[in-house]
Image 1 (cartoon, rainbow, N blue to C red):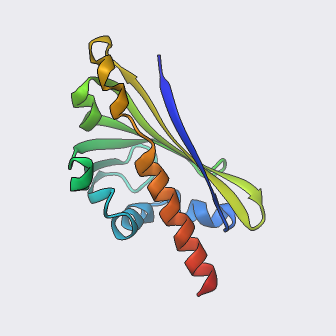
Image 2: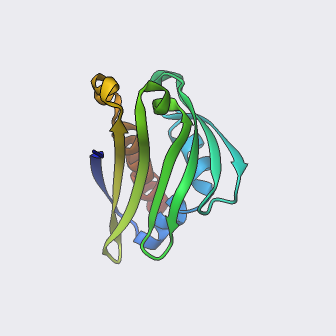
Length: 156
């Protein structure tokens, strides 16, 4: 059974502008600059940021310094949805059979949108006690950083 943790953050910027950040390879650079407490390193192994792109990600030491390979399973520019799945290492080494990051940028009006961030996961039965390790908090921090980024950009 797939479990899901969700966060929604409102951003005072047009959905198209926020998607330009979340939906492109620039998102990796944004993470490194604006949330170094979440992501320490990102290496592109293959691809150009579209579906199938493979990354090697290292979480910041405060999050245990976990390392994993991640593949972009979906990059839907029309509906502004990006889905990335751990394919090696990370939570998969802790008994998770699925650990997926999902971002959706939902237009609220012309000048604001909602960033819906979620973690979807599945665990082996014998690793059920590790369910508490799954958290949407890092994605929430990313959305808050994006919120501040666009707030500062509009006042600059």
